[in-house]
Amino acid sequence: MRSVIFDLDGTLADTSGDLIAAANSCFTGMGLGAPLDADADKAVAFQGGRAMLRLGFQRVNPAWAETDIDTQVPTFLAAYAAEIDLRTRLYPGATDAVAQLREAGFAVGICTNKPQGLAELLLSRLGVRDMFASLVGADTLAQRKPHPAPYVAAVERAGGVVARSILIGDTITDRDTARAAGVPCVLVTFGPEGDRIAALKPQALLHDYQALHDLAQQLLPPD
Image (tube, rainbow, N blue to C red; front, side, top):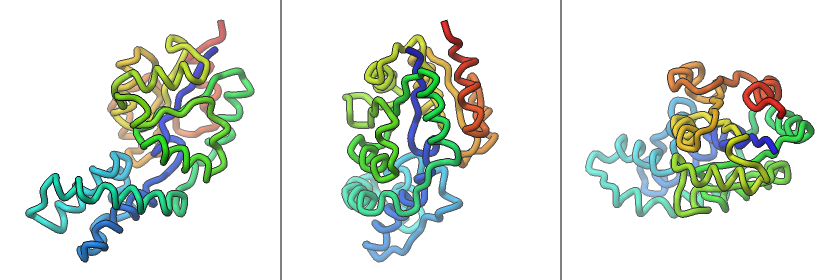
C-alpha cells in the first residue's frame, strides 16, 4: 500500500497561536509580561516549546539559563493542553485532501515531534483523529525526528511500506527525516517560511492542498 505521512504543526494545522499563548503564560506567571508575538514569532512556535521559552527568556532576562527553561516546560505543557484548540485551525483543504488520498487507496498517518498525548488530544478536538491510521509522536519511541525510526513506525503502523511512502512537512527537520528514511519529501509553502522553504530543496513543494492528490500520484505512481 502506498502511504502519505504528514507532519502536524505547520503542515496539517496552524497551531502557532495556541503554542505562543502557552509560552507567554509562563512569562506572565513570572511577572515578565508576554514577550512573544503571535505573528512575528510564528516560525519559532513550530520549533517547539523549548525554542519559544528560550526566545522569551532572551528578551526579558539577560541572565537566563537552560535551567529556567527546564523549570517552565511543565507549566508550558499544562497551559497548552488546557487551551490546545482555542486558536488552532486546520489549513484550508487539509481534510478534503486526506479524504481524497484515502479514497484513492493511500494509507495516511502522522509523524510529529509533538508529544503523542498532546497530538492525540488536538486531533480529537479538531475532529480528525479517525482520518489517520497511525500517529507517532515525539515520545512514542526512544527516538524522534529527524531520526528515521518514528517515520518508519508511522508508515508501518498505517499499513504501508517505507519504499512506497512520502513525507509531507514544513521544516528542515521533516526534510532531514525524509532523507534519513530514503523517501521523497514534500514541503508546504503556506507555513511561516512561505516560498523560502524551497531553499531546502525538497522533492516537491505544495502550495495548496487541492494539489496533493495529483502530486502524491506523481511521486508514488501505481504499480
